Image (cartoon, rainbow, N blue to C red; front, side, top):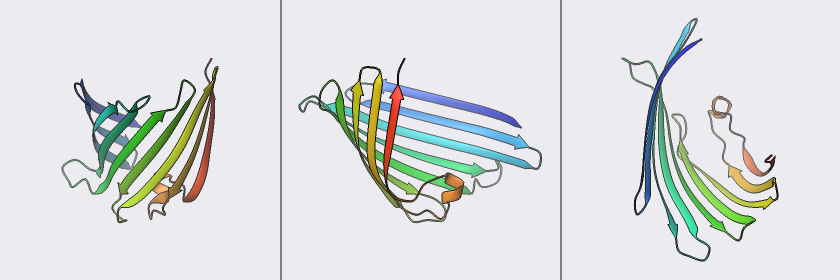
Length: 155
């Protein structure tokens, strides 16, 4: 397999945080060539409410196919995220993703989470509702309402 990749990132912290990330790549394997272009832009801000309410908005577009032809496979995604710190050890998060693939209408994925830090341990608990995608096998998305539990040790 041979992969060539070119990427550019731009970040600016002014009144709000702004960022843009772009990437173009070509993957070549025997009998297969895939060209990919991805672009993402975002904005974030922390409101002076209580301990600080962090909010961000991010949008992404990804295209695959072959350069010179139409990059026929497209994915568009927008995410809105809010994070509120309850104290030194706890925080609440809410995410709303909107995803559009070539074979589906726009699907929404709401997620609510809680994070707790205790010493070197990090605990994360999230509830989500993942809709069914016709391209779920390709994208690796689970389906249905679920509970995600993550535990990490920082050493």
